[in-house]
Length: 124
Length: 499
Image 1 (cartoon, rainbow over the protein chains, first blue to last red):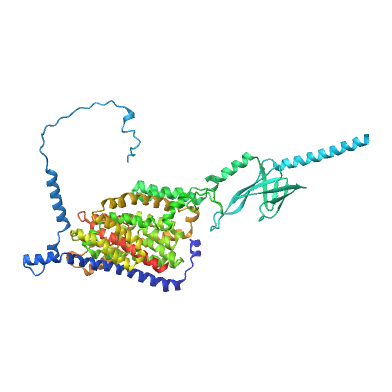
Image 2: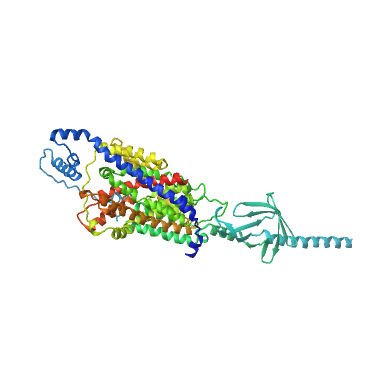
């Protein structure tokens, strides 16, 4: 520890003058860049949905259309998607309903074994 | 006649006895090899450390000799008179050297050469080139650290995709081998022309990080961020870790460029840390990269105590509004508008941000599925392997085990803590101004440190501990990915300020 501290040679004037300026200005620029993104992406949906909002206003004859009326919440989207998925996966072709099992007998040989293949990954 | 015969016989006897004496002394010198081992050989040009190395002289019967030194072979002619050996070097830059034949061996200057048979001298030479005589305690410590990384990855599943290549790279980089200034076996990562050195080129020149960012972009879903843009500010708040650590490093005596490279550890983004340190402090890449990746792997251990300390039980229970569904147009616009805005403010971060947003556009455009698939799977896997193994191998003990590395590790831990606290406290501050169901759960502030997706996962875990039905993962992903953008912008700013 003494060895570590002995090697520390601090120029405090440099820390306060250039270091502090760099740190404060740097952080503020990061902030500014992301705040700019926040502003832009808060306004973009308003531009995109301008026509929809106008149409809804006319249809519902309301003065103000809230964001909740305009956007579908993710949960609702997920529920609709699930319902559609279940519906489409339930659809089948006409099937004969006759199930047959054919017994296939194979002679075992380690040469054709899938257990000892070179491409088998070790199990966890 | 008798007298003449006596004279001739005496002459022949004298000549015979002279030649007999001469032959035996020549035999003494020409048999086997004369070997000396002395200290004072520098490991590398920039290193102060010296080691012991062998030198050997082979005296040929035709009065020529070959001196085999670490750097090169010298040849010349030798003469012996009254136990004094004169060596005339063929290389004109070397002066004539005079040595003496003593009972202990041949003494030239301070060096004493002992005689060994050719086979024994060969074995000594072979032994010198094995790892055993070149091993140091530092090598052993680093190998143990490498094994510990592998253990953490396999046993606790901490960032195995990074810790396994880095851990094994550490072992590769710390296999001791013959090193001396001006002698290049083309083995080590710091030796020009070695395979590892070529692979390390991608780290040194900052090639791998943008490629990793391409893959990250192609894997990242920015919809949670687009649906609730205000959460992006948390990603900026957590970047305070970068700038406070930068100040801390300056106080500890690092140069501004080194301090900038160390500060970026607080961005909790390995590729960004490597990118910036390759530009600002290439000699510290190994320590900075290892610190950044180690702390990223340790996010589940570092963050929770500070979450518990700063966020009250009531705040942890806050339920956030579910994110709205984001349209395809918004998702396509985000990488284009995002790049234009951020790169215009900080053009130095263009390699990182350009690749990040390009990768994201490949994914979101939905017409370049093959490219997005390659960027997010094969390409990022290849680059991760190369990056991990070379960063690991760059931790050669004599370069890595320094007091500076210890300070970097200390500052790295501090920067992660500051970044976490910065994000958490800013989230609490935001809640002061937010009303009703717009309030945010302050736990998600911790995800602003980036470390995608580990810190978001930690937030989810801690949120579930407080309320098993409150899922924060999607909300935490917003500050998490904005942290990636924020740290890249921060890196660009430091680069333009300090380079």
